[in-house]
Image 1 (tube, rainbow, N blue to C red):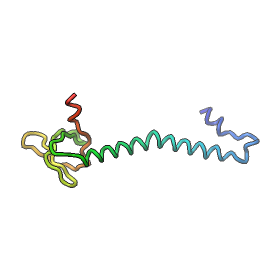
Image 2: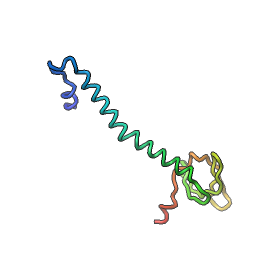
Image 3: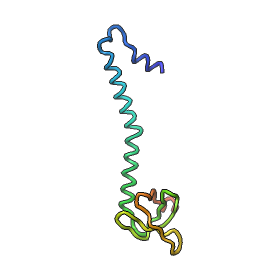
Image 4: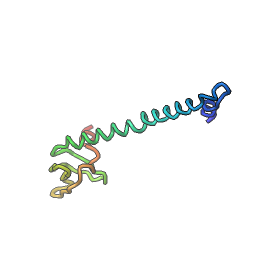
Length: 106
């Protein structure tokens, strides 16, 4: 906190240009927020979109609600998943969150 007040203090020689230091600090804070918060979230969303587009029959998936199943049919906006023998659920593609087939093989 002392560091910020030290930077933002105006000295007599700075009185005319003190607002520039505040503007620079705001820009720096925005850049840091973008690098550590917004950019990783955008990357994660792109990965999820790619996962949903590349779904194939037989893929093992998990829904947002925690239901595990195997993809049995893919339509434009929905996916039928088989959760038990002869038990199928139709879910929206956006409710599928991950493919756990690789995790079980290890």
